[in-house]
Image 1 (cartoon, rainbow over the protein chains, first blue to last red):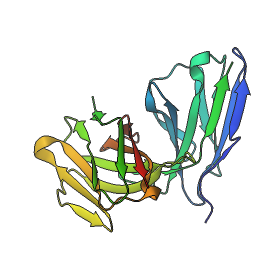
Image 2 (cartoon, chains in turn red, orange):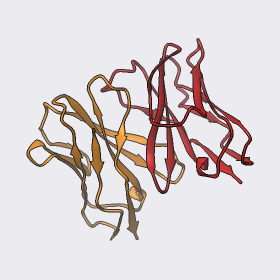
Image 3 (spheres, each protein chain N blue to C red):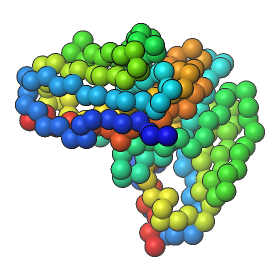
Length: 114
Length: 114
């Protein structure tokens, strides 16, 4: 069974641009979560989707948005990029989306904003 | 609010030594789950173990063992006879019942030297 796939692996963008990151969960998994990882703030929760509905959102500005498609694939979008958005963005999926379900993470997309 | 503290930022030991990674958590909820994840250089977080708040039994899996103590709000992780392949960043995380977001500690970078 294929793991969680994130594309692209690396991105370099300029301040003010926007970016879209993609995540394909493990087959059959219906919940997809996104996390931002930076050296200063560590791992922070962005949002979680289940059956195309956003169930939870972290404390990030509205420039960060996401969506989930009917095949459970998910995308996150960051508009008007700032230098501080440089980070590793990790996507994770779980089978049921229950609180106790372990998350299966992808390798991440490393975004650099210059 | 929930909080996870991993006071050890970096640990370096020689192969075959035993090493314990500390994790202290804070929550007012009575039902919650604790996790340990491993992040190798490739970037993806790998699930190691889950514990719920009602199960204080310690667990051993090969060279890995976990000590959960509600009285001290700690969930420590011990690697016995460490190996170079254990080198990674280890994260402790907490999720409360009903929420679909993990609160992570800052992580402990473990280096096992040959």
